[in-house]
Length: 212
Ligand code: SF4
Image (cartoon, rainbow, N blue to C red; front, side, top):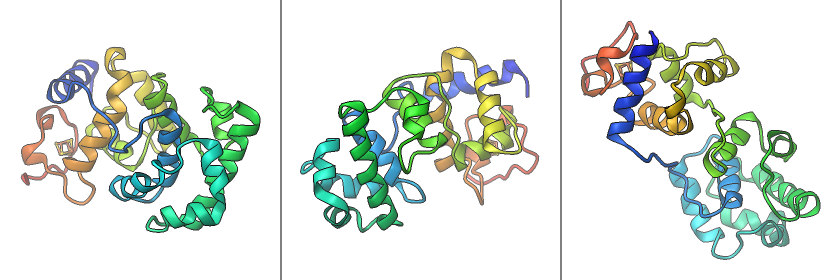
């Protein structure tokens, strides 16, 4: 992989989808934060179904905190690990109210201090809600970065560092979404769909398939 190829990969991903969006439904940084906490080991579709019921009733830290763990659980019990997620969300809401005036903080340290928020979640919120140049590496991005050779790394931190270094700057802000969507729908874990992949001629993966 070299920088000419990297640039062409992102030029094509941009051409196909000029304004990529997260598949989580949200209308404020707070709604996005909660949706991302709920999405750990769950599908975006499942989270969207739950938040479609929750947010019309409560979509601020104070309102969700007022529901309490049991009240919140009623809305999210279709989501995996809902018990611990409900506890984390209620505690996070308490901290947002008491420490941040009910607003979502825009710095990594404060975000990662919230229960249920790790580096990846903080990166998603900083990138997607606040348009900061951060890179959240999930399982899809880890796989695509390594297979293609765009930003190889042995662990997520290495891949994150290499993506920040190697993705052309003009594409950096949106590259998170392009890579997730590519991994979710084309470069799938068990059977990559190399036969219908837009970047097949630029990808370094040694075990390409003819599947489409
Ligand atoms: S060619 Fe295959 S391995 Fe490479 S990015 Fe496309 S789907 Fe993934």
